Amino acid sequence: GLSHHLDEGELEYEMVRCRPLITAQFLDFLKKEVTTQKLSATDDIQGQIAGELEAMYEVLSASAERVDVDVATLAAPAERLRALLSSPDKKAHILTMMENNEIDKPLIDLLNQNVHAARAAGQDDAAAFMEKVGDALNKYLIK
Image 1 (cartoon, rainbow, N blue to C red):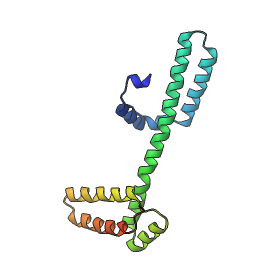
Image 2: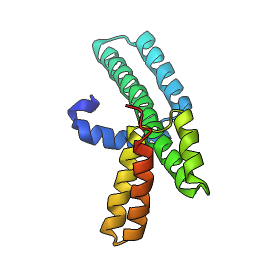
Image 3: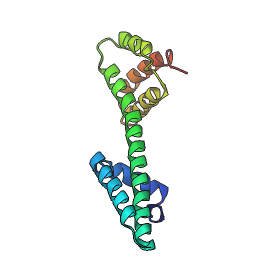
Image 4: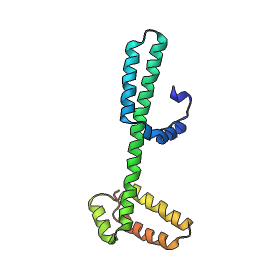
């Protein structure tokens, strides 16, 4: 099976890389193919092929779902941070975020990564500004 050829990290990387190709239509096709192979299997080898296809279907559908959840988990804080940093009234925006329970650890972590990146790039003013925003956010962090 797939697991014999790729270690866990490689499989995860390939799933993220190939996710756009693993469409609902492809998974439907694969599922129909599994059923067809199972029903038409006349010997052990054909049964084994059907089993391999079924295992591939299970891995691909579960992995595609996991990738989608991970992408959504990472995209949400980035969207919220982008909206906050581009907002003309940061204090009002932070209060709205607090009311909507949008201030969480992933948001703070992302902001801290941006602060470190700005410092590393010699953008001390940007880093200091983001640290001030971070201090304001930390007051309302959902714990």
